[in-house]
Length: 106
View (cartoon, rainbow, N blue to C red):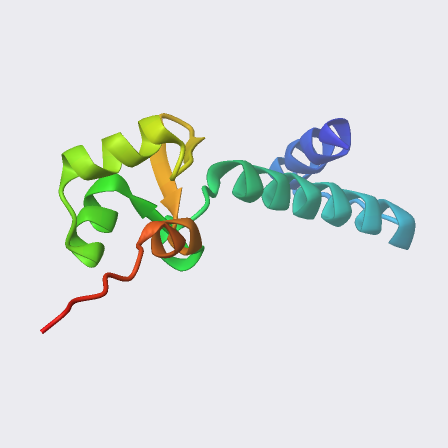
């Protein structure tokens, strides 16, 4: 494929036309699309804002709990942390289930 492109560039510089079969065109386009999709998939990282994941800071702000409380719950096993690359996340559902209702007597 690369050789065909090089030959095409060389021929174009000499003002000649190279005829490609439908199969050759399909192969060239197919390889280019596969390469583009593959590089885009590699580049894309999960977006924690839309996946039900919180950073520790987001959980702290959203649930109005302190950072030490989050670390205490992690140590006790009430919460589980997940790492994506170098970042640490908490699942929103697990944070919500770690909260316990309090019964007040008036």
